[in-house]
Amino acid sequence: MTEAGQARQPGERLSPRVAKQVRDLIMSGAVRGGERLRTEHLAEQLGVSATPVREALMSLTGEGMVEFRPGRGFSVVPVTRQDVTDLYDVQAYLSGELAGRAAQRLTGADLAGLLVLQEELERAVGAGDLDATERADFELHRRVNRAAAAPKLTWMLSLTLRYVPFTAYAEIPGWPLAARDGHGPILDALRDGASAAACAAMSAHIRLAGVLLVDFLAAQGVLAGE
Image (cartoon, rainbow, N blue to C red; front, side, top):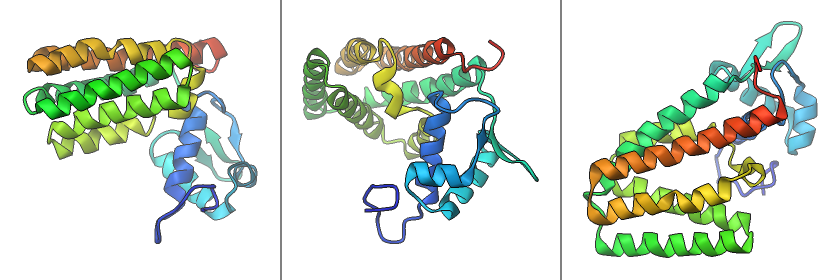
């Protein structure tokens, strides 16, 4: 196990994983704009040493998530409604493009596998099993993206997914139902090989997730300027 409590591959650097954890704290509203990020406190909270925390915070300054001031240390850059909307708009565009391409490439076996995952997701939502819901949702999207056979687009999408607070989805009102119900139009379009419809349905699905996150953050009073 790593210092962060997860299995780590030999040679894997810990700081990218810590950076993801800090991003999740920021994007879920667990830490607020302007709040100081003390290296020692974060190291204790995340169960790691101070060195990967410092490395992670320095990398996050380059992403515009964290600010560093000599003599004052690190602090959270305030997140605005537009910031979140921009991130999900980019994600929606890339996910839509991938779905549109996948519609022309999915085999019957691929589609059958997606339907099985959708059934698993629906059962998980009905049972209130949020972990299983997230796993089925993630795998369904992963298979669609992979089927597009567009590695550069998939890589660019992975950059936007860094800012999705998956760990907070269980707390976001409406997310499980949106994950369940939003897949119907996508799967219909994929089954029909309708690229434009698949693109539009996937884009709308992702944008709704962004709206739910914005509403969640706004309700907590953590969006800057509101």
